[in-house]
Image (cartoon, rainbow, N blue to C red; front, side):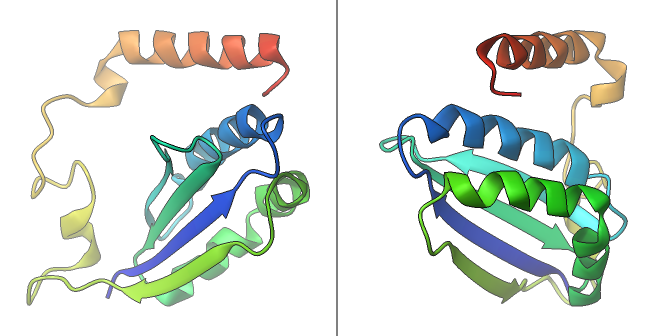
Length: 142
């Protein structure tokens, strides 16, 4: 059963928005590599840039333990918590999958969900990521 966490957070003030944005994007790059993580992605509300949503998808509820034990987690939390308005809205879900489908059937690139391009085969994607991270560093947000 796929276990999903949906977290809604609001930046404390306008100054926190770019810092929160950068840290959440960085966290997605880290957490997507954790064993048992299917997806970990971030969204920012179109009409109110102070609002962010994080969707964390795991192979099982037990897989969240790996996430919590990742050394990055405590550093992330120490930086993240002061940037947000309390409390964050955290909701836990069991995803409803078609009968007989495992967690991997929902992972991008599994063959079940078509993918036209693979990131590791697209050097231009990595150049854009490097450029984005350099921009964030110059702004003091990375």
